[in-house]
Amino acid sequence: MSQTTASTASKPDTGTVPARLADETTQGKTTIASSVVQKVAGIAAREISGVHALGGGVSRAFGALRERIPGAGTSATSGVSVEVGEKQAAVDLDLVVEYGAGIVDLARAVRRNVITAVERITGLEVIEVNIAVNDIHFPEDDDEQEPAPSRVE
Image (cartoon, rainbow, N blue to C red; front, side):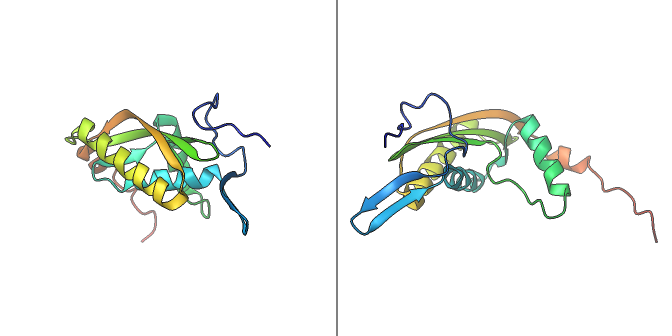
């Protein structure tokens, strides 16, 4: 059974492969789904102050729509793609940062936090974390979105 490692895969694995071997002993083996690595990386990125959101314009729009559908929840993997091999993982993140945050320092903090979390939780070696800053969020953008007035008293 030959599986492609993260460094030689031709395109990101976004969950099409159910799971990858992470550990094998005489007592059994452990596999980790790509979606698990995506969620861990997404949560770790959002933990850093100055990260407003993950995803590009289209994925954020779909995320906003999904939030309005009862029971649909939100996607922890929006803006996160991964390649997962047998022992390694590579992560790509699309970020929206808060205005005023130092982008280079923020990216370093996000990268460090993602690597630490993924390696600690999954045991996979993270070989790279690529970060694309797609937008800047201005605080006044939140003020412009006033709730619709109630139709009933």
